[in-house]
Amino acid sequence: MGQMVQKKHLFAWKRIPLALQIALAIILAILVGNLLSTQAVTNTALISNLAIPCNLILKALRALATPLIMLAVLHAFLTADIPGRSGRRLTVLLLTNTTVAIFIGLLVANLLKPGSWGRISPPSGTEATGKTLDPWGLVQDIIPDSILKPLVDNNVIQLIFISLAFGIVLRALKAQQIEEGKTYYQAIEGVITILFEAVIRILHWIIALVPLAVFGIVAKTVALQGFAPFKSLGAFIIAVLLALSLQACYYLLRVKFGSWVTPKNFLAGGSEALLTAFSTASSTATTPITFEALLHKIGLRESSASLGALVGSNFNNDGTALYEAMSALFIAQVLGLHLSLPQQLIVVVTAIFASVGAAGIPEAGLVTMTLVFTSVGLPTEYIALLVTVDWFLDRCRTAINVMGDMTVSCLLDGKKRLIMNIDS
Ligand code: ASP
Image 1 (tube, rainbow, N blue to C red):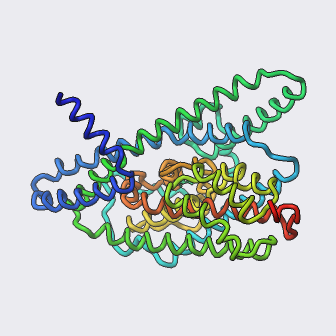
Image 2 (image 1 turned 45 degrees about the horizontal axis):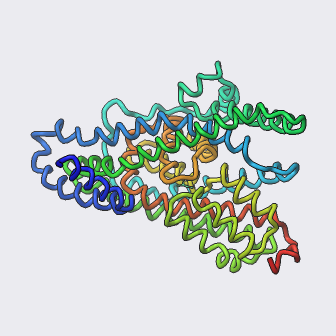
Image 3 (image 1 turned 60 degrees about the vertical axis):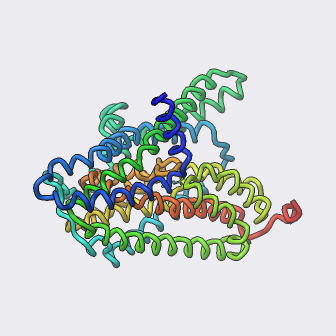
């Protein structure tokens, strides 16, 4: 009987949308944190234990990051339909857009310095190790000592290198076998697809626990440090929103000057996709709506719409890249550490790779962010602070991710409209 009541409660809780669960967790945590603050001096060790769920969740996310990136890249290469030369054009467009996004993020973070609005002392033993940029070393480091080492070390650059190599080869083998009427490739395609889905399902379990993590970390922070750390989070939210808006303006300018679509039609035709992205926080879930909007509401050729929204979207997460770079800088500022220009360049490179590897699902950016932090020696424990605002910022960056896919499609469609599509 008791078990049935428990099950019923669990079911009712699961039906509350994640964003609302997190909001409730924050309110409850503030109340509990305030109550506990009177014990801050006498019971510090006990109160610190409230951070345990958050630390465990971050550990699980770190562990999942590498298989997720590897499977996402392999899956995209094996299943996406990329016609000949367009592949190169697509790659150039994706790379430029992502690089611009990261530079915008770093510029805004450097100018506004949101992390210096409040200061938190670093936990003992978690200092930034101050890695500096060694371009030649970086190139040499791309090739791993062994195939499995990047998986063990969570080295994202080496991992993407290996995944791209295997992805390209498997794709070529698949094409060759199809030509020869062979079907061996189906076995490996099936395994990769099912493993990719399995990792995403496990990720969903972890995400379901995020409200618990938020509760613990907010209650602990309020109890031990009051509201000072959250003051700088407010500044961070403003800075991220500003940077994402600048990126949106950049897209509109590119669409205006690089395609036949007017920014007004772009926004009007794509509004449904952008709103869906905001409300689901998943660019993958939004994909069919993006594709449909590009094809019928804006009127692009089918090839351009599918390349940008179906193929590109697997690799193109400009909003995520911008956010990850800003987060690294923000946490460095919060800790009073200075990330030098060479270190920020490392952030640029790893954020590009990390965003390529981020899956189009809620909170995926948090997973790959751990890799950006590690690359410049920032303590990943501080990502816990960002978890509290991630449910909102995730939605905003997802909308920009989708807007990026739409922009790429428009640019691929060129400056001349295909008349046939007008009526379709
Ligand atoms: N939620 C984002 C997306 O689906 C990924 C991220 O977490 O940054 O595009």
